[in-house]
Image 1 (tube, helix red, strand yellow):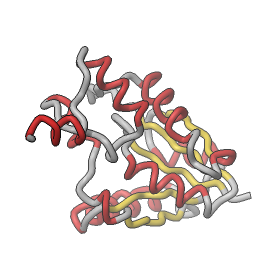
Image 2: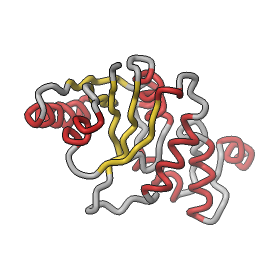
Image 3: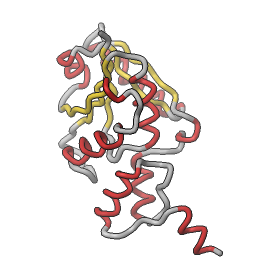
Image 4: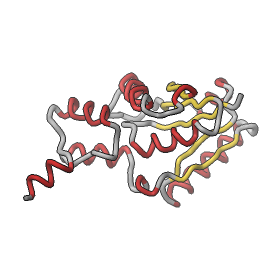
Length: 175
């Protein structure tokens, strides 16, 4: 049984994340989507909310039976070893992602040389997409359709206390 681990903050989960989850889960027996808990960061969504958002988002993934949503604190390599994961999955959007993720892969290998890191290039339609960009778009009432799952849009609407614009609304207002 091969266990992979896909770490991230997922604050919030995007369709780019789901693209990587879908593809990685097809490559292994079990995929642990591990939400990192960093006490120094102030996420928009609580850990409990991010777990719930991810669980709801993966319901539509065909091979979701081998996906587990979990959280961890501390070093990823230590958590991976504890969970029996042998491969860390990292999604890449651009060369700038590679530089940082390559450094992290080498540090994880230093901690546990039995861990492999694989890099999955995101689908081209998500190369510009990040959780930070999603939060900025939501803050400025821009359309999020096609960028995040519908359940994330609903949660962002609750956070902001208003309905977020969608592309159809924006086009109708301009005509």
